[in-house]
Length: 346
Ligand SMILES: Cc1ncc(C[n+]2csc(CCOP(=O)(O)OP(=O)(O)O)c2C)c(N)n1
Ligand SMILES: [Mg+2]
Image (cartoon, rainbow, N blue to C red):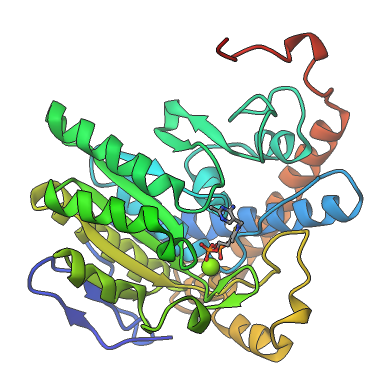
């Protein structure tokens, strides 16, 4: 999964070789990496619990982010350190939403569809709706719908001249939708401040990438729209952080950019799917060698940034928080029936 260090002249985006342990990029400290390790462990513990609660009949449906954590957290951390950004994630972006500030209790209320659900009042698919205080919108899980919405948002920001950069997240499958073409072409024409982030996990449900497109890299399409496109190791937090940091600068100063983060989807498409019918277990298990939630904490210990005891305490604390969130949401009431028509337009 590693790549040679390559710097692009137009954007400054670097594909980093992490095996040799590159110097930390601008704005990122060892303490930050420790905090990222803590976040990754908490998100993974949460994600696994959500799946378990689905099997107990208490969570109707979930899309797992296992394997996508480095891509989501790397890009989020870059956004948080790069001035005003507004995020349009998609349904697989649990790590992003949690690291942006959603608590384990709020996450579990959402997946169990209980009163207090933060995104839509438990009216929609989990964590779908808006979290405006954290500058996040994900209106629906209609594949690729977020692309046109995010480009419209970026146009508004540009017209108001407020310097906001919009980050738009989507999957490889979404990249083949008509809306993706419309959004990218429009963004290019108007030089909009938008970073397109494709989390390419090589599958659209059961359809492998080779049946979705002829090209090997989604990023190759950027050239056809007249803006830069890059392929990044999406299992590498630092590479994703660095690519997004430069991508945001480019979007703010020049115009759109497309960053394709190659990730693994360790779990089936959703809790409703059985991926044993269409993909080889050995390939999925082999990819766990690159699991960011194992690799980053191990690197922290190897490089003397953290002790094994600290990492163990992150795991114990994550389990405590997730247990608390599970009990809390399990005991919570569903939304009151009298509120059924709240927030609806007539
Ligand atoms: C317009 C539309 N078509 C079909 C679906 C059903 N559907 C839900 S997720 C999905 C696959 C999307 O794959 P990808 O964009 O690669 O994202 P991933 O789930 O792999 O992260 C499909 C076809 C949908 N939600 N919306
Ligand atoms: Mg996919």
